[in-house]
Image (cartoon, rainbow, N blue to C red; front, side):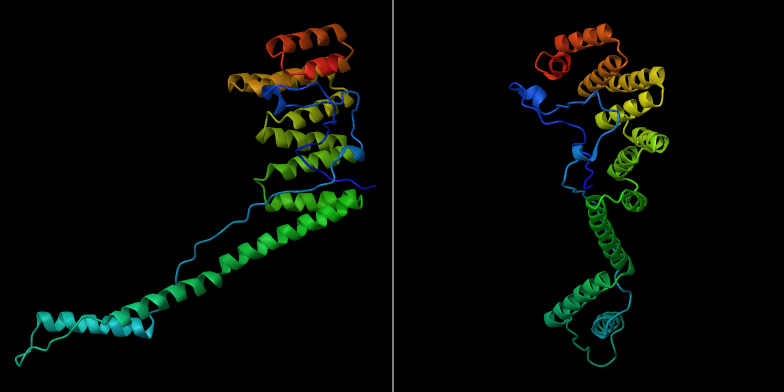
Length: 281
């Protein structure tokens, strides 16, 4: 049983709809309203996750090189003799030769490069990046082999290593749903939605899970909360997506007339969006 998780396209069924206008082509979501749980066949085969690696700026070495000490001595001597001239004829002390300055500059640059290369922070960053890459590769293998528990364990390690990468949290929730761990999946989706409250995919899957758990009335309240967030932030696209999910949940609850009215409103708001036409047909 081979499958791969990807956040960008989980349960979007390829269709051959009528030509789209530029406005609707980039925001198309097709929802299989009759499926409460998605089979592994709906998952894409390409698993590509970008993980950002940190960087550091270590402090250069504070040790003075022999050449630098010599240069300091020359400069200091020049200053001292200039301020306190001897009784005998004043000695003429020239400034450090250009070759010496160039050697000092080259040596300092080399020392900085060596310090950066051997810095524990740099080595740790490189090691961490390599570890994450290795985990992603292992995750791909586990997913292709259908090893759900192993995949879940790796996803949790990746989420712990990169807590700001919300994609790991979504994939954890998605996999828990596939494994039939409904409450754990619900908790994981809510954790994700707390940080990304208007995610279309997460809102829809979470609504389906709530409906399967018998939380029919709570589903609509949850979606109404998301709609208020979208409207308060004046996010027209996200608000429309939430309305579409609400209409489909009404249809699942067999409130057909109410669902059809919702679809009609969506059509009036944006005739170029073919999704309401599709679900009505």
